[in-house]
Image 1 (tube, rainbow, N blue to C red):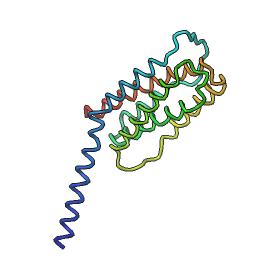
Image 2 (image 1 turned 90 degrees about the vertical axis):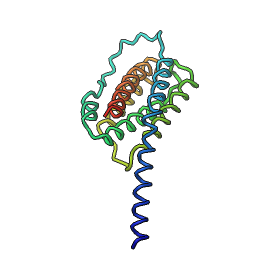
Image 3 (image 1 turned 90 degrees about the horizontal axis):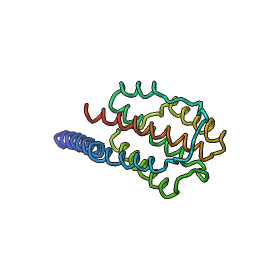
Length: 178
C-alpha cells in the first residue's frame, strides 16, 4: 500500500512539474515566434496591389470576444486552431502570390512551431471551433477560389491573416497577464 501511495504521489508530482514546464514555452517563446511571424507576413506584403474588391468575408470579432472570456485552456485551444487554420489556408495554391516562396515557407514554419509550442501547454485534445473553421473555409472559397488564387486575392488573405495574428498575440498576452 505504501508503494502504491508513493507511486501516485510521484505520478502527480511529475505530471504537475511537466504541465508547468510545458507552459514555459508560452512564457518564453510565444512572443518571440509571434514577432517573427508578424515580421514575415509584413515582408510578404505587395505594395503594388491596389485592391478594390470586397472580400465579403468579415472578421470573426465575436469569436475572439467569446474566446477572450473563456478559460485559459479554451483560449489556448482557440489560439492553436487559429494557427492551424492559417497554415492550412496558406497551403493552397500560392503560385500567383507576390511574395517569395522561401518567405512563405519560413512564415509557415514559424506558425507550425508556434502551434506545436502551444499544444505543449494543453492537456487534452478538444474539438475545434466549427464557426471558426467555417470562417476559414469561406475565405478559401469566397476569396481565393472565386478570385482564382490571384495576387490580389492573396493580398486580401494576407491582410486578414495579419489581423488574426495580431488578435491571437493579444489573446496570448491576456493568458500571460492572468
